[in-house]
Image 1 (tube, one colour):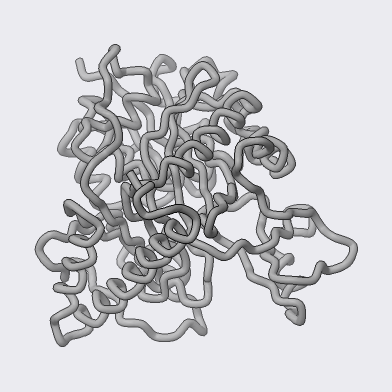
Image 2 (cartoon, rainbow, N blue to C red; image 1 turned 180 degrees about the horizontal axis):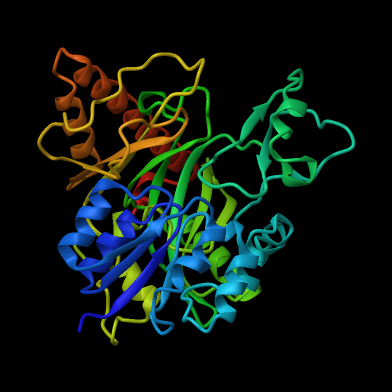
Length: 411
């Protein structure tokens, strides 16, 4: 009988694909119940346990699953450590980081300590200052994901009070903005050590994808990318410092900004991140096998090769400028649509679907998107806009690397 695994999180379609590639039978629950997830489960013999309205629904859905079936949790649940503790007490095997580790890495004060001596920096951060600090600052909810709710506040900006209303003053942080190139790195943690699975560019606030004024909204990733040896060493040093401080376990993501010579740590996601597809593709669900301890002593063959792009298309909010967004199903050959919503109507500000592209190199990905843009219709305009934003990301990364190291240092 095929081994089963429970997958739970905000969206688990990509994890379910990794589970099937690993020879496992996924039992899934998330907030979307996307069409392609349901089709995959039907094809693979898996099962959709139900659509979550909130993570509080999760314990009830799991009662129908035998207690020895392990749970792999993903995006969003890092903001619910109390629920993770409840699940751990149920006796079900819960993979990855323990609730105490989740709390530890979601505390910005810990992160600011753990970067010491690693060469990595942490932005100046404060909670509810008595007076508004001067300079370029971000207002960030402590419990959010994917850049949701992050605002950039200039000295003269008066949005602070309005922005804090949905979260409450105790749930907000002020963090000095660091200009540069957003990046994600994925590590496997075990026994206080860290192994780098790979690094990718993180796409934030792409107007071509419907982000509008949401400058820090997560819009996907592109990678893997090669880092200079000095940056790899810094990233490894901070990952192992965090592993020792928080007792991290399993596959986790670290978000950075590369600003010239400096690598700045922004946050730790103590679970398999959305960018895992970049490193799992063609490798039999590597991240999930690592999380479940199913490598059976085999090596996973070093860093991933090729270049993969994930673009997340968002439904615009009221007041956003009109942008040519693609119609579901109308895509060039070589593009795979994923995370297709079960409902026809997608509310404003919600993700609509993802677009996946696999090529040999970053230049090849850009050339493919530029070729898709040669059409004169709205679909062509969408791809021209998206290609321009990808070109800007690649150029920014190149500039940051070259400003901090000689070009021949790049591996």
